[in-house]
Amino acid sequence: RMEIEVLISTENDKDFENNMATIRAEERLAFAIYRDEAFVTGPLVTP
Image (cartoon, rainbow, N blue to C red; front, side, top):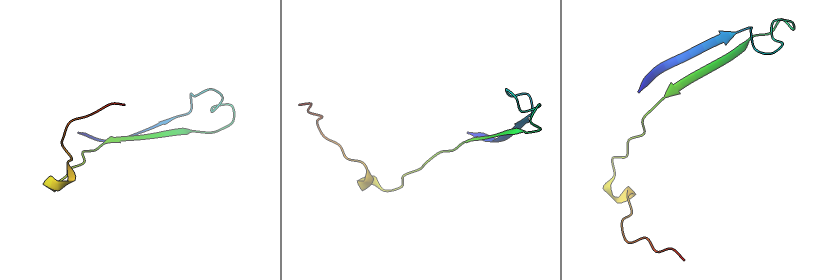
């Protein structure tokens, strides 16, 4: 896992000339499944 990361830049393409800023936010999360019946098992048959 990774903490949230927020980056702000004015050096993207013409952001500096247009008095703009680019903001990027990124976070990695985990998704837990606590129900055994949520998983389906069996043979995989392709057509």
